[in-house]
Structures are given as C-alpha cells and as structure tokens.
Image 1 (cartoon, rainbow, N blue to C red):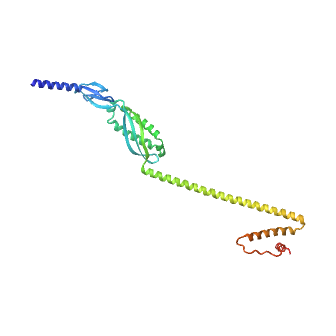
Image 2 (image 1 turned 90 degrees about the horizontal axis):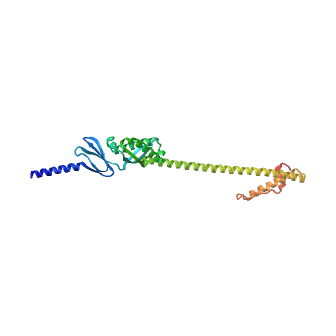
Image 3 (image 1 turned 180 degrees about the vertical axis):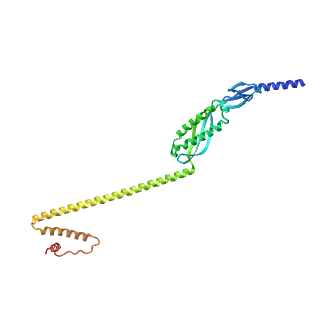
Amino acid sequence: MPGTIIFVVFFLVVAATLFAGVKTVPQGQEWVVERLGKYNTTLKPGLNFIIPYIDVVAYRVSTKGDVLSVGAQEVITRDNAVIITNAIAFIKVTDPIRAVYEIQNYEYAIQNLVMTSLRAIIGQMDLNSALSEREHIKARLQDNISKEVANWGIYVQSVEIQDIKPSESMQKAMEQQASADRFKQATILEAEGKREATIREAEGRLEAAKREAEAQIRLAEASARAIKDISEAIKDNDLPAVFLLGDRYINTLQKIASSPNSKLVILPSDLPAAIRGLMGKG
C-alpha cells in the first residue's frame, strides 16, 4: 500500500508537471513568458511548451483591435469659450513585449494622452472653428497620439470625436447673442424701410413741387402770350389786363362757390368797373 500511494503521488506530480509545461494560446492573443523573473519568450497562438516551475506566463496580451472610450470633458477654446467633448480611440497591440514592459498600463495612458492632446488642440482654436472643423481636430489628434504610443508597441487605427458642443451656460449665451443679432437686424431693416419711405415721400413732394412750379411758369407764359395777343388784336393796353384779371377773378369766385364751407357768394354789379378800380383806373 505505501508503495502504491507513492506511485500515485509520483504519477500525479509528473502529470501536473507535464500539464504545466504545455500551453495552448488562443487566436488573437500572445503570452509573454518570464524565466526566473526575466523576459524569456512570447508564445504565439496554438500549442506551445515551456519549462514548468521555471518559466511563468506573466502577461496575456490581446492582439485584437481594442476600443478605448475617453469620457466627456470641458475644454476652453482660444476665445475663452467652454465646450464639452469626448472621443473614442481604436488601437491594436503590435508588440506585446513593449506594451507590457514600456508602460505600466497602456490603456489608461492612452486615454489620458487623448484627453491632454484634445485640450491642447482645441485650446488653439476659437469656438466656431472647434465646432465646425471636427475632421481637422481628428486628424491632428490621431497624428499626435500615434507618435507618442509608437514606442509602446501600439498602433492607433483611428480616433473619432464622438461629440463636441458648447457647455450649457455657453449655449444660453449663444442663444441670447443670436436673439440680439436677430433683433438688431430687424431694427436695421425697419430703420432702412422708414428711411426709404421718407426719401420716396420727399422725392414725391419735390417732384410735385417741380411740376407745380412748371405749371405756374407755363400758366404765366400763357397769360403773357394771351395779353400780347389781345393787345395786338384790340390795340388797347388796358383791356387785356382787365380781361385777364376778370377771368382770374371769376375762376376764384367759382372755387369759393364750390367750397363746402361757402354759403353765400356776392358778385359786383359792374365787374369791369370793379376790375379797373383794382388796377387804380376809373
């Protein structure tokens, strides 16, 4: 019985030792092996063998693409506007040895690197540029990160800006500014409309005055021609004037009679004598 027990124990130890020396690495991973605390080899996907109790699998590194989310953060632009932005980084480990020995925690480091670079890039832009030039920010961000993480054995496939928008207080300020601009524009348009109406009204009055003046001139010229024609016809210097004054006198009385406020019109019995009296001739 003691011999049997010893054999069974020995068999179990050998089996455990052999099992410990056989490693099956799944596809999409690489395992970093250390021998006595020092890097020894990297196990590729498939069946691998190590020396039990001497070689130890220290790190299991995924070589598949990974997604790192960078949480929303407040960033101040060049013109002191506060915006909120977040991003996503798509990375892939190309050198597991560097990824585990060059940096303590590459995922945490990349997240902080994205945040820092994003603040620096947007801090050099004004608000309008930061909101409209997302592709420009993305390109600069990926370029900055790729250079930094190259020594860590990591390849940055892409960096996407998920969201970029003004902060709540900034949105309210922008809405107030837009409302003020609209009110200002409406006021300007109203003032321009009133000015245009005033100009047109003044132009209308000016045109009416010009036409009235032209009418008066033409009327005076017509009267002069009438006096001349009558004088030449009757060879009398007084009668033409009497005729014209009488004509105007009658026209004036007609206007007075047609007025709604006029109730009574008195005409002189001897109209020519009255006109001569106005001219100072008996």
